[in-house]
Figure (cartoon, rainbow, N blue to C red):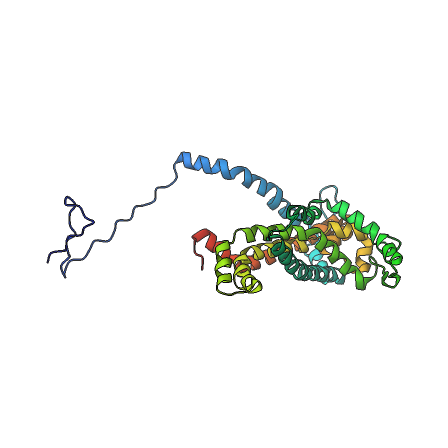
Length: 335
């Protein structure tokens, strides 16, 4: 049986011959991957070695030593000899003050996502359009994020005191009835903290979302607009789904940051007031009951518990939320 001559085949090229019914095509020969030679291994060691050494020295080693010291009643000097086993860890898990601090961290996590996320998306959508003074507004929103936490905490603590600028302003404009004890009232202090956190960190979310929006092809929005979709329909059906990977990354960073929150709370409320005001966190609990109490063994145990909580949250988030994004990035699968 002859094959038709294809116009794409030259005269000198051999034609494909049909296989008979009993003939089976030989399977393709797979080439075995050659291992890295000494030069390749040396290159990997040079590129990975420094980062691995830094990671082991500044992450793994401190965690291991903290776990070790957590088994002792240790005052921070000399060789720890008073072995107490799991007593420090059991005390942490049974301490109502730690439970309260953990609850505050969970509240901050949820409120950070609820307050910062939608507001940052709306601001990013606004700044993604052509506006007069767009660059200035971007800088203005991002400036609080780059200001030191010490400066932010000190400034807000002065303004929010009972005789501070906020209550003074309310008094001058005739809204004296709205004056509050912003820092020490447990019913208000947590919302004061969230106001400061949102003001401080929303700029990072806005810049991150802006970068994601600028990576979305404009042709998709233009095609949807031609088909009759409104502006908000375009954002809901096209923009937000394509922005979802960026949203998930931001949410992960926000969760981990909220779990480890320390500096703003410690600067504004101090080591003791934060507990009575309802703004204590696991990190402030660590400092108060560890370093300030002179019980460094207990403080190291708290640090290990905080590390394990953050690690479990990160692994669960990676497993159930970020897995699709990372698999798509590594394998090229966009499903």
